[in-house]
Image 1: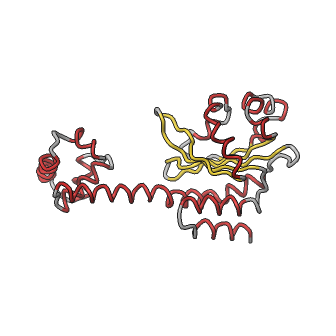
Image 2: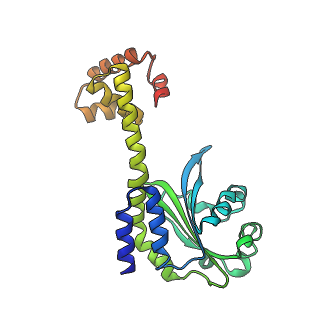
Image 3: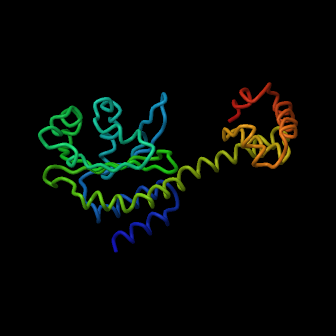
Length: 241
């Protein structure tokens, strides 16, 4: 029943912020934790990193904001870099004697008496979107195989919900920008379609196939777009993206 309620809360959240709040609130009934965070994934210098933490309790936020100082010594950083959903509990991959002696535990986790973590990358269509981490102190004990199983059962729901909440927001903003440029430069409907495809990194072959036009016709549309927007070509056009 608790899992069904959690799935219901996931799909009825009105936006990304409410999704994070509802998920962590209801997840605690299934997987007890001391602290929890959901951080958004972004690319920085060709490497994925995390930012914008939402934490339970809220005063744990500063802890996660300080993570960037210790990221280089985190032996589980590889999970974040994966293009597929990965779920790990540290106590299952490393014994206490080694895990508690790692730099990330001694220099960072000790501040909150953290004993074990359960981590999951939130990924949709090979695109990392967010990163979930649950923490337990020694008095709480380690996470179990059952805890990992519950996250595994929820992963598809969570991946899709985050994609819908965040990737669709980006798509909506993108559509708005195309509309603004269309009105600003007086583009036709077809030119607006092509501009959107260019901004989505489609090549000429993709556009010809999608629009059902010849390459010659596409070139005429492209030249009209370049002329109206006063650019010399596709590279210069991308400044408007």
